[in-house]
Length: 181
View (cartoon, helix red, strand yellow):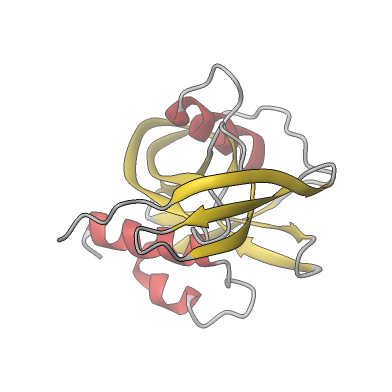
Protein backbone atom coordinates (compact mmCIF):
# COMPACT_ATOMS: atom_id res chain seq x y z
CA UNK A 1 0.00 0.00 0.00
CA UNK A 2 1.40 3.39 -0.91
CA UNK A 3 1.91 6.05 1.74
CA UNK A 4 0.40 9.37 0.75
CA UNK A 5 1.57 12.63 2.21
CA UNK A 6 -1.02 14.13 4.53
CA UNK A 7 -2.38 17.54 3.53
CA UNK A 8 -0.88 20.57 5.22
CA UNK A 9 -3.17 22.32 7.68
CA UNK A 10 -3.06 26.00 6.77
CA UNK A 11 -5.62 27.19 9.31
CA UNK A 12 -8.19 25.83 11.78
CA UNK A 13 -10.90 27.52 13.76
CA UNK A 14 -13.97 26.56 15.75
CA UNK A 15 -16.99 27.86 13.81
CA UNK A 16 -19.79 26.50 16.04
CA UNK A 17 -20.10 25.05 19.51
CA UNK A 18 -22.77 23.61 21.74
CA UNK A 19 -22.73 22.03 25.16
CA UNK A 20 -21.61 18.71 23.62
CA UNK A 21 -19.99 19.51 20.28
CA UNK A 22 -17.54 21.81 18.55
CA UNK A 23 -17.43 22.19 14.77
CA UNK A 24 -13.99 23.03 13.44
CA UNK A 25 -13.29 24.40 9.96
CA UNK A 26 -9.95 23.24 8.58
CA UNK A 27 -8.21 24.87 5.60
CA UNK A 28 -6.04 22.22 3.93
CA UNK A 29 -3.46 22.21 1.16
CA UNK A 30 -2.92 18.87 -0.57
CA UNK A 31 0.36 17.66 -2.08
CA UNK A 32 -0.89 18.64 -5.57
CA UNK A 33 -1.40 22.26 -4.32
CA UNK A 34 -5.22 21.94 -4.29
CA UNK A 35 -6.74 23.72 -1.28
CA UNK A 36 -10.02 22.82 0.38
CA UNK A 37 -12.03 23.75 3.45
CA UNK A 38 -13.39 20.87 5.53
CA UNK A 39 -15.61 20.92 8.58
CA UNK A 40 -15.26 18.31 11.26
CA UNK A 41 -16.49 17.61 14.76
CA UNK A 42 -13.73 18.17 17.25
CA UNK A 43 -13.59 14.93 19.16
CA UNK A 44 -12.85 14.44 22.78
CA UNK A 45 -9.45 13.02 23.53
CA UNK A 46 -10.79 10.47 26.02
CA UNK A 47 -12.19 7.94 23.55
CA UNK A 48 -15.09 5.57 24.04
CA UNK A 49 -15.82 1.89 24.51
CA UNK A 50 -18.51 -0.58 23.49
CA UNK A 51 -18.83 -3.97 25.15
CA UNK A 52 -20.33 -7.21 23.81
CA UNK A 53 -21.25 -9.11 26.99
CA UNK A 54 -21.63 -12.90 26.78
CA UNK A 55 -23.25 -14.67 29.73
CA UNK A 56 -24.48 -18.27 29.95
CA UNK A 57 -24.73 -18.67 26.19
CA UNK A 58 -26.44 -15.34 25.64
CA UNK A 59 -25.55 -11.88 24.45
CA UNK A 60 -26.72 -9.21 26.88
CA UNK A 61 -28.10 -6.21 25.01
CA UNK A 62 -29.27 -2.87 26.34
CA UNK A 63 -32.47 -1.15 25.20
CA UNK A 64 -32.22 2.58 25.83
CA UNK A 65 -33.52 5.85 24.46
CA UNK A 66 -31.53 7.40 21.59
CA UNK A 67 -32.16 11.14 21.25
CA UNK A 68 -30.81 11.23 17.67
CA UNK A 69 -33.55 8.94 16.34
CA UNK A 70 -36.10 9.63 19.12
CA UNK A 71 -36.52 5.86 19.44
CA UNK A 72 -35.61 3.14 21.89
CA UNK A 73 -32.67 1.26 20.38
CA UNK A 74 -31.27 -2.17 21.12
CA UNK A 75 -27.47 -2.31 21.27
CA UNK A 76 -24.46 -3.09 23.37
CA UNK A 77 -23.35 -1.15 26.48
CA UNK A 78 -21.17 1.82 25.63
CA UNK A 79 -19.76 5.03 27.00
CA UNK A 80 -16.89 7.46 27.27
CA UNK A 81 -13.59 6.67 28.93
CA UNK A 82 -13.32 8.75 32.10
CA UNK A 83 -10.12 10.67 32.87
CA UNK A 84 -7.57 8.34 34.45
CA UNK A 85 -9.30 5.16 33.24
CA UNK A 86 -7.89 2.63 30.82
CA UNK A 87 -10.25 1.50 28.04
CA UNK A 88 -10.67 -1.89 29.78
CA UNK A 89 -11.57 -0.21 33.08
CA UNK A 90 -14.12 1.96 31.25
CA UNK A 91 -15.58 -1.12 29.56
CA UNK A 92 -16.01 -2.88 32.91
CA UNK A 93 -17.52 0.24 34.51
CA UNK A 94 -20.02 0.69 31.67
CA UNK A 95 -21.04 -2.97 31.97
CA UNK A 96 -21.80 -2.51 35.66
CA UNK A 97 -23.63 0.78 35.16
CA UNK A 98 -25.75 -0.30 32.20
CA UNK A 99 -26.47 -4.01 32.64
CA UNK A 100 -25.40 -4.88 36.19
CA UNK A 101 -22.50 -7.22 35.44
CA UNK A 102 -18.69 -7.10 35.77
CA UNK A 103 -16.35 -9.08 33.52
CA UNK A 104 -13.40 -11.16 34.71
CA UNK A 105 -12.28 -11.47 31.07
CA UNK A 106 -12.22 -8.60 28.57
CA UNK A 107 -10.84 -9.03 25.05
CA UNK A 108 -10.19 -6.05 22.79
CA UNK A 109 -11.70 -6.93 19.40
CA UNK A 110 -10.95 -3.76 17.41
CA UNK A 111 -10.76 0.00 17.53
CA UNK A 112 -13.33 1.64 15.22
CA UNK A 113 -13.82 5.15 13.94
CA UNK A 114 -17.20 6.68 13.29
CA UNK A 115 -17.40 8.63 10.03
CA UNK A 116 -13.68 9.50 9.93
CA UNK A 117 -14.33 12.20 7.32
CA UNK A 118 -16.13 14.20 10.02
CA UNK A 119 -15.19 12.81 13.44
CA UNK A 120 -11.82 12.17 15.08
CA UNK A 121 -13.37 10.02 17.80
CA UNK A 122 -12.42 6.36 18.21
CA UNK A 123 -14.27 3.56 19.96
CA UNK A 124 -12.71 0.39 21.29
CA UNK A 125 -14.87 -2.73 21.02
CA UNK A 126 -14.48 -5.34 23.77
CA UNK A 127 -15.84 -8.84 24.27
CA UNK A 128 -16.78 -9.41 27.92
CA UNK A 129 -16.86 -12.93 29.34
CA UNK A 130 -16.90 -14.61 32.77
CA UNK A 131 -19.55 -12.20 34.04
CA UNK A 132 -20.71 -11.83 37.63
CA UNK A 133 -23.48 -9.65 38.97
CA UNK A 134 -22.22 -6.23 40.02
CA UNK A 135 -24.04 -2.92 39.75
CA UNK A 136 -22.71 0.64 39.73
CA UNK A 137 -24.79 3.81 39.60
CA UNK A 138 -24.74 5.32 36.10
CA UNK A 139 -25.82 8.65 34.67
CA UNK A 140 -28.75 7.36 32.61
CA UNK A 141 -32.06 9.21 33.14
CA UNK A 142 -34.04 5.94 33.38
CA UNK A 143 -33.20 2.28 33.97
CA UNK A 144 -31.83 0.49 30.91
CA UNK A 145 -33.70 -2.65 29.92
CA UNK A 146 -31.37 -5.67 29.64
CA UNK A 147 -32.36 -7.98 26.77
CA UNK A 148 -30.77 -11.46 26.73
CA UNK A 149 -30.29 -12.86 23.21
CA UNK A 150 -29.21 -16.42 22.41
CA UNK A 151 -25.73 -16.60 20.91
CA UNK A 152 -26.89 -19.09 18.29
CA UNK A 153 -29.58 -16.61 17.17
CA UNK A 154 -27.14 -13.73 16.57
CA UNK A 155 -28.15 -13.42 12.90
CA UNK A 156 -31.78 -12.70 13.86
CA UNK A 157 -30.65 -9.44 15.50
CA UNK A 158 -29.79 -8.06 12.06
CA UNK A 159 -33.46 -8.22 11.02
CA UNK A 160 -34.70 -6.14 13.94
CA UNK A 161 -35.61 -2.53 13.25
CA UNK A 162 -34.44 -1.48 16.71
CA UNK A 163 -30.97 -3.01 16.24
CA UNK A 164 -29.66 -0.49 13.74
CA UNK A 165 -26.68 1.31 15.26
CA UNK A 166 -23.70 0.67 12.98
CA UNK A 167 -21.28 0.33 15.90
CA UNK A 168 -23.43 -2.38 17.52
CA UNK A 169 -23.78 -4.20 14.20
CA UNK A 170 -19.99 -4.04 13.72
CA UNK A 171 -19.43 -5.22 17.29
CA UNK A 172 -21.78 -8.16 16.71
CA UNK A 173 -19.80 -9.27 13.64
CA UNK A 174 -16.48 -8.87 15.45
CA UNK A 175 -17.77 -10.96 18.36
CA UNK A 176 -19.24 -13.56 16.00
CA UNK A 177 -15.87 -13.92 14.26
CA UNK A 178 -13.92 -14.11 17.55
CA UNK A 179 -16.31 -16.67 19.07
CA UNK A 180 -16.43 -18.64 15.79
CA UNK A 181 -20.24 -18.74 15.74
